[in-house]
Length: 229
Image (cartoon, rainbow, N blue to C red; front, side, top):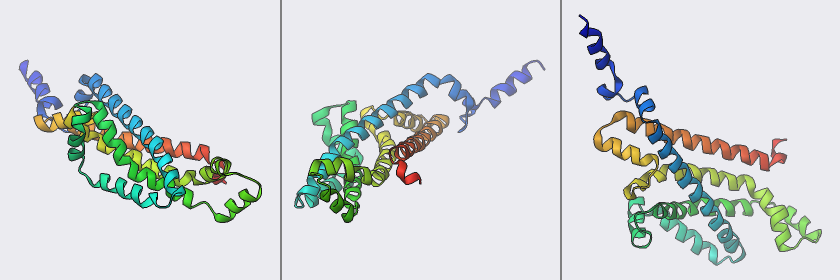
């Protein structure tokens, strides 16, 4: 009779039952989850920031030289259509099995969204506002910094939010080179049929995407106070 409660406890243990929802997994693998989440955030942030640093100058170039627009947009679109596994494989001879491979791939994927977002924002600035700025003696650079970019921010942020959420999702594919953040846990869980690991890592990816999207929304509202009225 003494052994019965112990047997029942073991039978109810979610790890032994390989349950999808398992609080014991969260407590026993906390360090592993935190490390994977930290890597996922780092890769995502670096890729999006680098994507912005590349997309904005390219958008300005495409806007100034009309002939460059279809070339740049077409090239970015072609890259976006390449499957992620194939793109990472093409980068391997140059960057090796490293985090750089994942970051470069994610930057290339983000360019299509970011480049179009910047161009759409700049193209959406009303012409009468530009004429007024010219009439006040604004030069090309001053008009860009003081008029065009501020008015283009909402559209640019919309593209940035989409690119960020997309990057969070695509980052998981980096597990093919051992640098997928939470994707590493998802892959290991699928390979070993560890249900709690798969579900927990997947939910964390969704939570991370939503959190970053909300953070960017707050930043957008802070940088565009005139839209709040």
